[in-house]
Image (cartoon, rainbow, N blue to C red; front, side, top):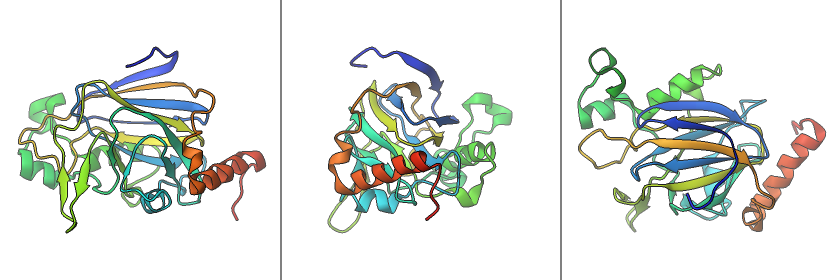
Length: 243
């Protein structure tokens, strides 16, 4: 990491594992690609009203982008902002390819069950998400399009997608400055388009710290982000608005 920070808490997530927790507004969550080969699949939900969740389509179209990086915001389906990407050393995060499932993992890597392999078992992104969602009263119907942090996928003129296997560096990080009290669901299983022949998902470290002043300033330069940030501030100023 390029600078020292006063952390509120830290968590280490081995490759293939999963995590969930509530990150409060005013807190920044730093995701770190420990070895340069991680995929951090993430979903966001309003911690107080979980029917409000991350909206991939609005996030991309309002910012005229195919990928996420610093200066972008993560939009909800209620026109609000979960978080702003206030710093990013990776430079490219996939938002269109979704999650690996158990069939894909089996077909690509074979079978490694907990009964025989214990913690070295093969896990899919979807299975990890479902386990974490279940802890919060959510389930399969709540799995929407997710963000794949640290994964770079590009499209050619014919729409063919390419996964860039050597895109990352050990220690790459992305800072998510939260504007809303947010339930974060994270799975560190392989990206569904990962071309590596062996199951070797990378570890992710999470560090939470108080958001520095003006962390979302670059994000607010985009008109739809500024509108979403205002909607989010009104939510907490009025105690909720269902209009």
